[in-house]
Image (cartoon, rainbow over all chains, first blue to last red; front, side):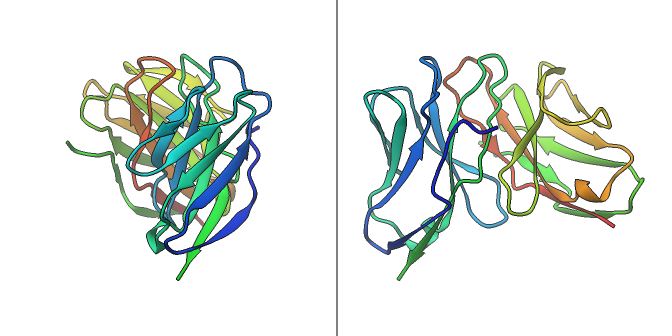
Length: 111
Length: 114
């Protein structure tokens, strides 16, 4: 079973920031939080990951709470092309870097 | 840098048949993982291959098997196809260097079992 919980869907206006929450209350100290997204019928695309510090790259920012029990993915200026299912994943194994996906959050960006 | 490629893109089989799906990993990657994604669900881990050996397996029966070749490309074989095997099959490649590495996914193969 997935170790994360996410809202099933969210809406965001184009140009505004999209803030996608994720709960991972049972995360272990050596587990990373990963975010992927999947645009309709394509393979998942890596977005960002972090351990305990906030992270930022050209796609998004990841804010992890101090207790590491939750995180937020921020898309600073959402576009229509950001419409996708967003998956928050906690890495569960060191030797096999398998990803356990939940059902994710379906983000709809509207004009 | 070449990304992850999969073939074929679509496939239709009948129940009881066997199927082979193929994946070419991204340049510099030594690990391939396979996932099954049913309609409306998140991808489910099938197994992973590292240095031509199975390196972890999800909750899938033995009729799901795989291979990894010296060039790190991989095959997924499914025997005795069932209707519930209809899904998008994804492969992902990575470099198995530790807990801090990302997987790059291919576009998937859409398998329909009739």
